[in-house]
Length: 450
Image 1 (cartoon, helix red, strand yellow):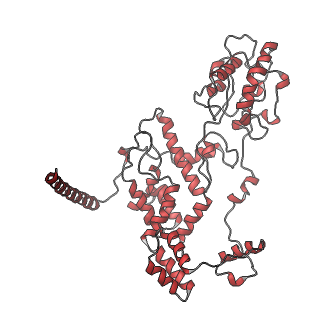
Image 2 (cartoon, rainbow, N blue to C red):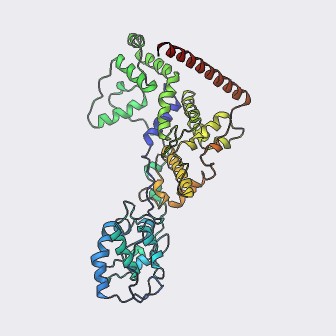
Image 3 (cartoon, rainbow, N blue to C red):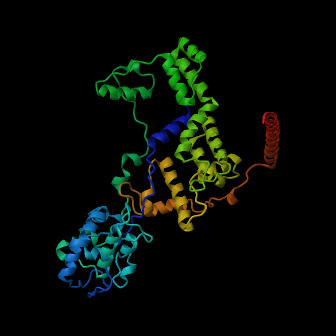
């Protein structure tokens, strides 16, 4: 019957949440205005509101408000979930800012976070695409003019007085996806004769609840082809199909068939591919040069061998995440840490510090999606809007991987013994000698006809 590794792989695949792409920086939106416009202002955000001219207020209504409504308020105008706690619903709210501080600096308007964000200088707002040059100019003039905003158009949400810090609630913790797995009672069914194992009882109970009947059982030939393709990815031989069809005890024959397929080396090749897809296995680094990842195949073989050996799932994870931290780590455990080298790598990044954190984000996002069945990528820039994942928790997770050595050829580590190394080099030399002999023979043949 299927072993622990198959059940673990299926559980991981079924529980996998779609890998959330690490999005643009949704932190503290900032906007902009015209230099040289004179208005009396104070440095205290919520204090002493200046008197704006009718022309300045008309400028806000006609030029600024449409930009805010169309590009900003979706994330920064709500009552409950607001990105980075930054509201753009009133002058006081913009001056107060959010988690990253004030949105506008009236003393140094050009250095305001709002303007830096819409100019894509560090922060990038809106994340869906940069504003047009005209829109950026309008916001720059608005900020430089002292943030004129008609009182009648201001909306100060109750929660805006202090940026709201997201917390994990009891309701969040009670959601079914975060509850411990329990073994449910096997349901009772009317047609108990149809049930061969507890899983059948769950299926039949749902069918009977909808007044449906099970499908007719497939013929032996179809059943064998399904099992063989599912477990090893290859078709059965004609002789194997005929032998299975002749079996008098179908259940016994089916159990023997599954044991044989699970013992096949092709089982690990077939099912290991699913894990390799999840952890984004690749043998090149990506980007413009797409250079090769030396010895990436060793990690591939580790995964295939793990499935074939029916390695316990917890050990399988520990070796990949911390194989080098185990007491007296084996070559196999060290090879498993190749997990950290599977992502894309830019060997000439324009921003090296950003590139390092992009690599770490890839590791954190992959680990959470594959192991936890949920994505944490959104929390790189702000508390997750839907899932109970705080931004500070994202960086706590990232800190677990912070000491992983940067990806480059100089950080490769030889784990083979001296005996293994000599054997490998001997076989490589033998291979090269054979190839040289073949090329000599091919060259001689070409000379006879050319």
